[in-house]
Image 1 (spheres, rainbow, N blue to C red):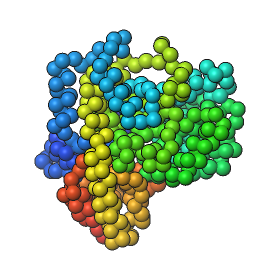
Image 2: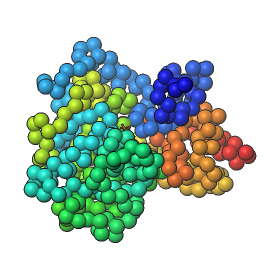
Image 3: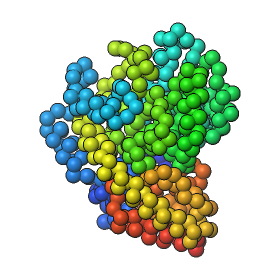
Image 4: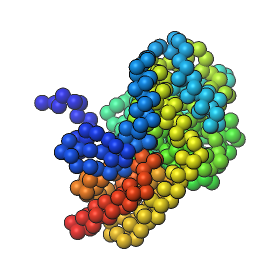
Length: 391
Ligand SMILES: *Cc1c(COP(=O)(O)O)cnc(C)c1O
């Protein structure tokens, strides 16, 4: 008999009932150090008092109104995002995959309105993850996500990650955009080197096509800049955001330049919930915290400390880990044996990590974890590694 919850997830037998900062409390009372943060969602940890206040005070006034009316919380969040980024305009969604939908629609509409309706193709890369909607799975293109779900949305060209020559060769008079995660998350914490980011921008400029960054996982302070692409000095035309921006409340956004967004006139796109007062009240609180230079400076300091500890861990367990990779607080440990074995050993030592492709475990802690949390993370990872080593 099928489970009453559609069985699309393989869930660990853990029942968390409360969260405090970087810690999750199991129903049996055990305290787990959370280095997953709901997969880079709880950017300020669990039950941050500023977010609790933003959510509850908004909840007492107004949860939802339609986008048929003015929503000041949404206006404020858009203004802040525009102020801090390359973007001139923002559309709010409820998830990363919805942001992917709009990014694809926006790129195609741009060329349609420029009398180049044949420009519909979007170049993507292996290991990518852009969500589970029809556009999201077609964009990523992996068999794991697409098998059985055809006919797939056409118009995606899949290339090998890091293959710049492939990009140049793939561009034709049908190309609309290049879509890439500045740091691949699900793909195994694979950062795109700065030189490659610059090359992609140049290729887009030379060919008059759009550059779309998916910063759903790597954005909102995760790498130590407000957005990961800032490290390269390159800006996109369109950017997808979600996860961290809501700090745990479902919220996403698409940011764009005025030029890239020029086709999206009244009536061309919409969302019932996107940008609702409750979500935007929380989003404002998250962004006000994370966009502070002092906050980001602390993320970078702690990320340096954490990385140093992880390098030591790799050095002392060469039979378990082969490499630390990533950027800021978006870190990956490449495993020698099975990454799932390490995730399990983490659970055994009251530590939450998240598996990724390429046999990596992801460490995506709350950005405001403490130095003591980093120490605890090292100790628990050390114990988990010893356990895997002894097995
Ligand atoms: C999680 C993720 C998505 C999808 O976001 P959902 O909110 O799960 O729809 C898209 N892109 C990237 C890079 C992600 O990490």
